[in-house]
View 1 (cartoon, rainbow, N blue to C red):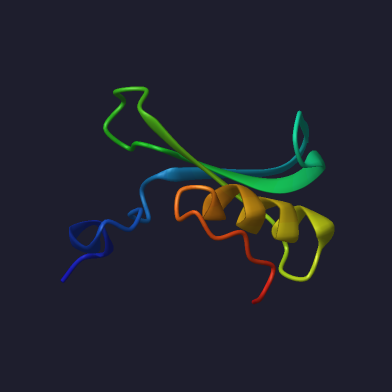
View 2 (view 1 turned 180 degrees about the vertical axis):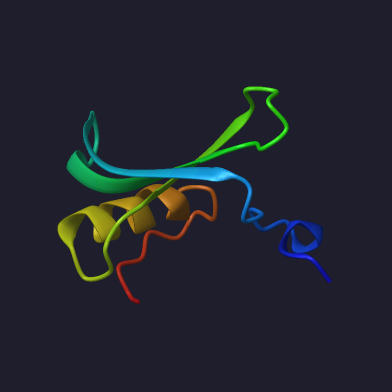
Length: 77
């Protein structure tokens, strides 16, 4: 099975990695890694994934934001 069959980027896709800083009005400053995958078919379509390093204040802030959909704020890892 090819990586793209699993929803993973193929070796032909282009990947850019950068760090980004954001300020969220409720949880404050966030420092996030930004991975951008470009489609190899020339369509210009891109997938952007923002993540935070585990154990950082940004990681905890993202977990708080994600928990809002569940109704349970949590900082446990």
